Image 1 (cartoon, rainbow, N blue to C red):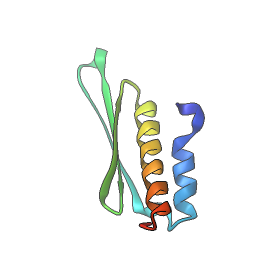
Image 2 (cartoon, rainbow, N blue to C red):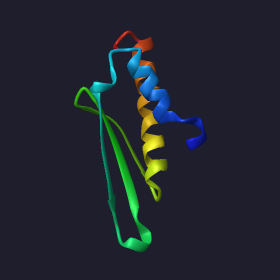
Image 3 (spheres, rainbow, N blue to C red):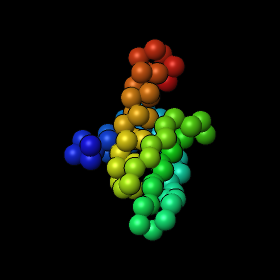
Length: 81
């Protein structure tokens, strides 16, 4: 999924719709060193939008960014954003 650059697309969307400051990330790892699991959570204006889990940090962040972007675009179509 990284080839789609979801984090960049999310950043571009936010830049043209109110600014990137409304987005915050929480990214952390858990588990033993040989089986680390990364969790990435996005918050927009303090509300949680997405949570993704992967063995790779970059993949977790890309998946969370995609989900967040999908939700923001859907909200915009509905007139909520």
